[in-house]
Structure formats: C-alpha cells, structure tokens
Length: 365
Image 1 (cartoon, helix red, strand yellow):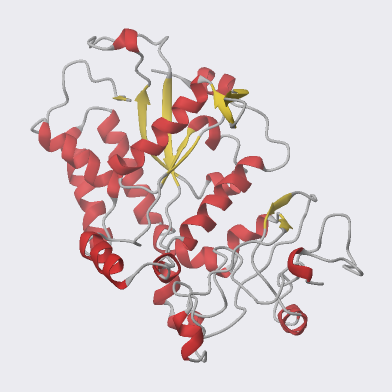
Image 2 (cartoon, helix red, strand yellow; image 1 turned 60 degrees about the vertical axis):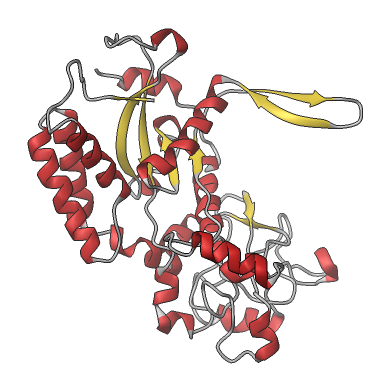
C-alpha cells in the first residue's frame, strides 16, 4: 500500500522549527522525570514506602509518562459553565494524538510520533528518529472487517530513543560542572529555557566552550536593566542547571551537588524554567544529548531493526524473528530491552510464525 501521496498531503508547514521544539521539550521533560527525589520529597515516609513497594520492581523512574506527538488541524473552543471555562481542542488529529500516547505502553517507548509530525522535523532530527511500525487507522465502520482498501488512512509510527540513565552512569560528567552547552537563537524563536545561572558562572561558562553562551531575552542582547521573575537581573535567577533536563549542576538524576552539605542533600534541586530561551539546533548535538543517544547511535542497532521490520512487513516472519532476536540480544547485552522488538516477537510467536490471512504489512490501530 503506497501512502506517500497521502502522507505528503497531511504534512503541514513548519516555518520556525515548531516540531523540533516540541520534541526537544519532551526530551527535557523525560530527563526531569528521572529526578525521583523531587517528586517524593513532599510525601510522608509511610506513603513513600507504599509507593516504592508498589513500583519498586518497575524499571525506570517512579513517575513515568508517555508522549504522543502528531500534527494536524483542530477546532479550539471553550467548554464548561459560567463558573469555570476550559479551553479544549476537538478534531480527528486530537484523537490520533491520544492514540499515539496510549500506544507507548504497547511498544515500550516513552515517545511516539506520527509521520505527519515526523515530516515537520528538520532533516537532522529526522535522522535521530526510528520508524517502528505502520498501521491502518481503524474507524467504527471498519470494525469486524478483514479486508482493507487503499482509501483507508494509514500512519507510520516513529520514536526517539533516549537513555536518560546514561546521565547518572557517567560519573565523570556528574562530578564535573558546566559540561553542557546552552542554546542561543539562530532565528529568534522562543523555547522554554533552563533554570538559573549566576553572574560569576556566566563568565566561567563562557570560557568553557564557544557553545556555552548565556541565553538573552528576546530583543535585548545587553540584559542591561532587565528584571526577571523573582527580581533577578539574570534570566536564569540564582542557580545553574542543565540545559536539557533542567537539573542542577550536581547529580544529573538527584540534582545533589557532590560537595553539597547535608541540608542540600535533603532537598532535591530540580530547577524549573523561570523564563524563555531561544532555540538553537546545536542543542541536538550537545554533550547531554550525545550521552542519552550514545547506545542508539550505533549503525548496527538501527540498521538491524530496520531490516527486521522490513522482513516483518514483507511477510517474511521467519527471517524477521531471527533479526528481532538478534536486536534483543544486542540490547540486552548493553543492559536494556528494546520494546518494539519485543512487541513484534510477541505477535510472531502468537501466530506461530505465520502471518495471518490478509496481512498486508500494516497493523490495526
């Protein structure tokens, strides 16, 4: 089923890196979610113990979220009463975003993107994404039917693989401050910025790298006389933080500075944004991004999964099973499981290695 024309017609126009910014925001949120201490601090010891006992065996952080990224048109409106009005968006595209979000558990991925969203990304960021499936969007009229026509809407699923725990494992980076770059605008566009930076550290960071430059407020390069939230003269407030996850310059996960005292260790230091910062595409190649992408940047991983998916789509499930197992062996050797490979192996085993009658390379969503 050739859906390239249909896909192109669904693509919107991205003039100011809107898709790149949305995906980068998801990456930064995902990093912030790994700060368990920040979310557990306000809980009583009894509630904390109960929560950890319930989710202690689950891999990943205590707070987990799935993200669905889709691009399309929607109608904005307000619903509610005179007492309380809520903004809402209604359209088929909104429902498809919810479909993507709910499918993250099935594929074992924290992020799923549609092809409509993927084609809005810059070419550089597109290459960092992985196609993991292609599906037919089933409507109420299609339920119970095995035969599908080419007129039905299809969607390709992509994910952005990231190993957030790599920030914690890399002890040399954890104990070394300011080893990340800050983005400054190449086109003057805004993106939610990191936490806080002192004047002394501004000078220190500027000498570290040509990329390590402070953010400037929109239309103000000097920062002279500008007051930011909290009465700060710096757009970052009072403390330095990581550019990707908003985590302070100590432990990438807990936020505790190596030389901090006992009081600091009791309080998780996850800096939340206090202002906006300009987007820079170099953020996709800074040190933090390289760390969380390192295990997925190997040619053998991406190519072997692509070959396995191709065999699966072409009904060569025997070969697909061998290659998916090979991908899993590689990932398990590196200490993790690849969710999409496990998903497809489950389908193959469920059908005893034989594609169902009428299988045309597309799943059903």
